[in-house]
Figure 1 (cartoon, helix red, strand yellow):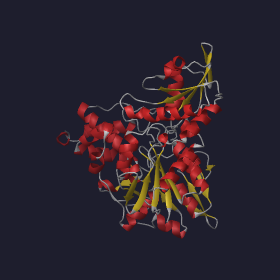
Figure 2 (figure 1 turned 60 degrees about the vertical axis):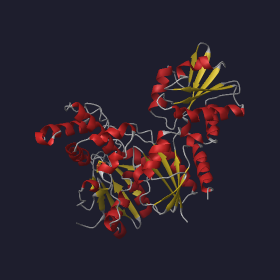
Figure 3 (figure 1 turned 45 degrees about the vertical axis):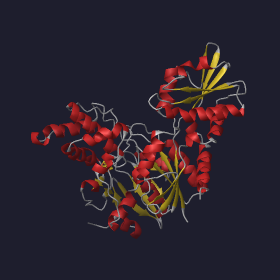
Length: 245
Length: 225
Ligand code: SF4
């Protein structure tokens, strides 16, 4: 039996960085040789989701959506375009396993913690996990809160809070929601793209990796999705799906 | 029609695919070259290096559509094996070899525009409102700017380097969305602005938007809605 892994991402018609982490993790997983075939597909780039299974010779394909939110894309668009009927489907004579958004996986908390430590977060720091959020879709915040709870439960930082780009509690008030002298903001986004590199630092008036304001330090970490160890989380999600039978 | 791309690969003969050329190199290797232009520069046979070479046009604008004509030139890649050649071509034109093979075998699954637009939800739902004439002109403008041949629109790949396109792509669908809105609002062509991204169809300076709206304005009145 040949086993394949398909990483699906959103991709973009306007932003070339959006798909970069998906390619990056696919290349790393390919290099490890755990699957016979590792491919990518995108909503807005190529190969398109609707053609994602064209030309495979694997008979068992695990699909991992590299999305933070469990919501419209991972529950409607991806299953519809790939022709899935649930976590375990038969598509064109193949078994297809669908893990759901990587943003819900418990081990993502490891990556958030790594990103925070890279930005020098120590035990006295406050960690602010920053999600996109949108008032239009209440589901989009769920995984951000879930991961924040997991990171908080480990007790590695004095405070762990959650802020959003596009809904309340808003990132602009991050100093009000925290007390520690050092606040480390970790963007729980897939890509270092338009938001992480431009809109967020601009809106928060950040001066680089560290900004001093009102006698407090704000440190800004890189996106969680570009961390090399996300490949481990993807592989773990895929291995769990292989155990479904 | 000359030797197909797949036959040329098997026979180790030079061939063209879209805008790239490939020729055998040594006993087992290949060289893949982009279009002419600039100092020749070698690019590693790695996905990220190849994407960096082909995903931006000469003005540095992002090219989200792999088949968009006007690929930047001057780059070449040395491949050590047929497998590496196929990987490079897959990065440059995703699924092209698969679709060429399936088309020649008669197994290519073709999905038409109606089916694709009908399954859109959210912000793309409105695309299904585009008139027949609008759809025809969208094929002429958007697919006309692409090296793939839209077999989903009834076109036939005629040249050996042609890549059959079995289903409207996401760029085409987002163009249909905007075109449906232009129809509704009676949009008029603007002036092309080279700083506007290829697929930013909402911007008035977008070249594809304006080519389409000019073609629409020139179409006989009876064909417009
Ligand atoms: S739908 Fe048209 S523009 Fe899109 S890939 Fe196919 S031929 Fe090219």
